[in-house]
Image (tube, rainbow, N blue to C red; front, side):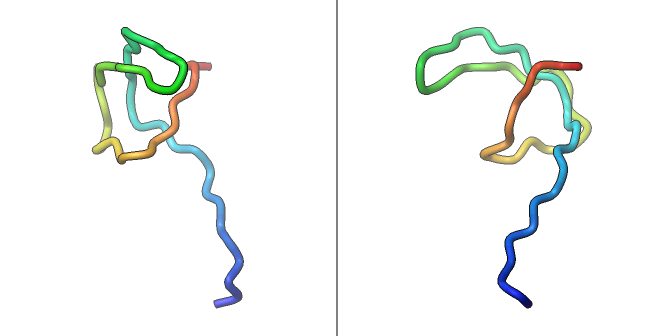
Length: 47
């Protein structure tokens, strides 16, 4: 290994409905998922 950090592209996993948003945390409900959602997963608006 060269010790370089590898960044993988984002992958669609499912839909989340965010129902409460605050400055540092938000609460959401996973509506559907193709695979388990991992801790630290990033969310973004649908395209």
